[in-house]
Figure 1 (cartoon, helix red, strand yellow):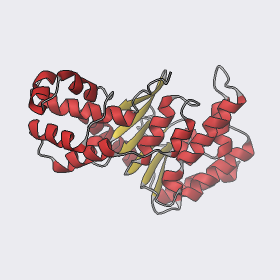
Figure 2 (tube, helix red, strand yellow):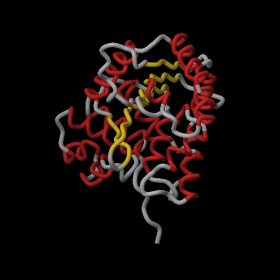
Figure 3 (cartoon, helix red, strand yellow):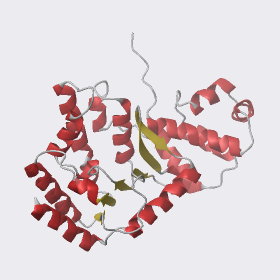
Amino acid sequence: MVTKREPSARQMRLAVELRRLREAAGLTARQAAALLGVNSVQISQIESGVSGVSEKRLRSLAAHYACMDETFIDALVAMATDRTRGWWEDYRGGLPASFLDIAELEHHATHRRDVESLNIPGLLQTEDYAHAVFAYRVPELPTADTEMRVEHRMRRKVIIEGPAPIPYEAVIHEAALRIRVGTRDSARAQLMRVLELSEAEHVTVRVIPFALDGFAGAWSTMMYVGGIVPKLDTVVRDAPHGAALVDSEAQLGSFRMLFRKVEEASLEPERSRDFIHRLAKEL
């Protein structure tokens, strides 16, 4: 018997946005179903990500919900009709679903922003660094599982190192740059890799030094993934049992403001490169 696959985070996001539109219109699922000429079970299945929705039906729902934002509707249609089977599907059944969800989010992203206080951002990590991170897990993973996680992380870097890179900004605290996750040699190689990537036109790396006065934002670690339209942005945060995805408009606004605040506190890109270069020479 074939087990039905759980909807991906991208499919769930489409479902959530359709539910939000209905609720904003003040309609119940039963009323929306009547307007569409279907039963309420079908609306519930669409809004739970269990069933897909065609472009025609989605546009009809948007019209009934009096949504006038054509750009947003087009973005939802793109999500509903996308049939991409990305490289991350190679890992289905081998890695937790959250790993695949993040890779899919990144594949469709228009930009990425990271803030890290204790670790080098995943997209900037070397293979040795990533291996050391995953190997430190408690309880320890089998070697094959660790290698699969490392390989998956390296493949995710296609969004900034591949043929069609997206704009990427990272704000990294000095603590993350100084902690030796691996050996001295691998730590130096990691810093040099960050420097190398920061030279690309689409990559901006900023550093927050220990010596900065009045910085109380070490808790503000985040991964900000830009959607086709700002309403479809997503923030990924670490949670006890995996990644937590934040997508409410109010929370997204708060995280945008938080990123700007952290960015303003950091060194300019050129000074940041000089700073990282000095740290590498000290090793």
